[in-house]
Amino acid sequence: CRNYKTIKDSMSKADKQYFYIKYLQIKRIILYLSRFYKNLNLTKLAKFKRFTMRKITFAFFLFICSQSLYSQIWFDAGLKGGYGVDFLVNSNFYNDHHFSPKLSFGYMYGGKVGVNINDSHAITVDVTASSFEQKFIYTFALDSNKTEYSRSMGFNAVNIMVLYRKTTNASYLEIGPEYSIINNTRFSDNLTQEKNAGISDKLVKSYYSLVFGCGGFLAGTENFRINLGFRFSYALNDLISSNGKQINFPSVTNYAQYKTSNPVTAQLVMEFNFDLGYFTKTKCKKKKIRFLLF
Image (tube, rainbow, N blue to C red; front, side, top):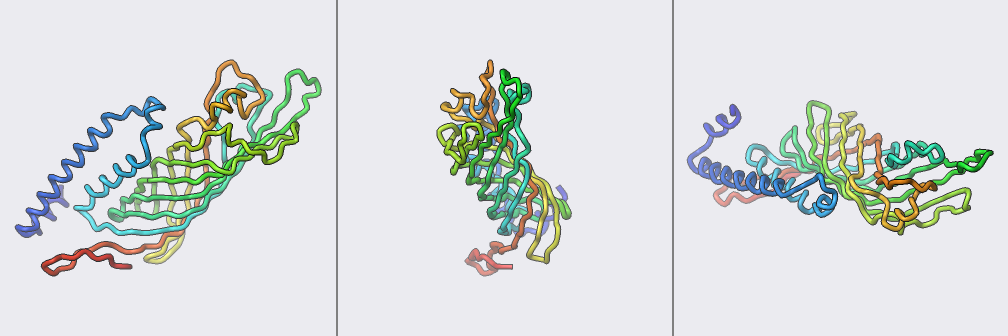
């Protein structure tokens, strides 16, 4: 409220009219968002699959428009890379003494473009390439020697994330949806002598995830920063396709009830951010909009 009064007192009559028009536009945006989210039912997975990235991105940009009235928007870009733990979550694996996941690792690299509403709030669009791996150790119940065999599955993916980032002092929190497109699948098993065999028919073509991250400032200058943090992602839908479900892939056990397999990653992420510039209006009567570099 204090900021609102300060802005209002410093406005001319023309600016107050402009402010009122923007106020009405924001009300329309809020009304649209309330209707938009009212029609969503995220508890049903089938409906969530139809909740496309286009709608998510559009909702974020509406949020940007509503905030731009009170602050100077500026843009940045960056490069990032990460490495960490991969895990395929399936509750059937926890109760199976003959089929156990092993600690596995994957990587990520890519870039981002950020729309900074002010020094505290930003929307970032990340495009990354990643690798997911999951290794297993298994035995057979009828084998008295308890011979152990190993198998592994993995894939590469192209990921698109639209994240909200909150920055406080030298630290940040980020959260948002991720859409992953699977490619270059692989499967190996030392019992069947398979090595890097394709399994694209056993996995879905794409999936959605929820991403959460945190970190802080490591080093940098006025317009260049190096951040170090952690990023966690959890897939919201099953990784296994209908063909894979028929053979209980990737397990060798026939379970009484099928359970979904959801990829999870936890990575240490380093990013290099560069401030680009911002849009501003000239003071002349025509008030042209220009983009100024930092």
